[in-house]
Length: 166
Image (cartoon, rainbow, N blue to C red; front, side, top):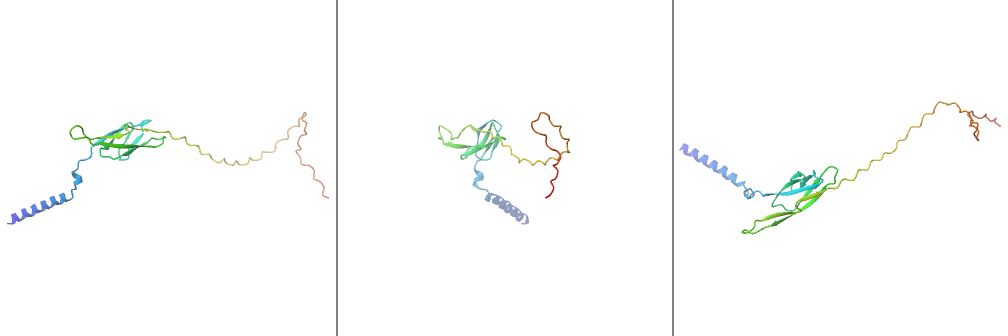
């Protein structure tokens, strides 16, 4: 009986672990992953970083992968020395019928094109002018010789004599 008892314990343990694993399984895990659809993306000028609001990104020209069950989203474009741009994309689903056509998903616009505008040039920052230090007085220079043809007398270089006090 000892061997039979041990087998029973093992079977119960394995069954318990199996049921515990099933209890954590949700119905969402059984749903298939959404099918991905490519959306063509381009920019003027090319080479911009394009990022969808759904998370995927690439460098233009390129194709972004978007789930076919996506709602409307936007594509943001960024390029150095250009203003950033965001382009909204509308998603339309056509259910089709089961006999003649398959369901389809369309995007408007398709391809998504971002026309980037160059940033305006930055204005240089004006600096306040520095105050220049006063020039040092020069050594006394010899007085220039009086000009003979001048209508004005030469300036006096010696101080006038002192006036007697009254």
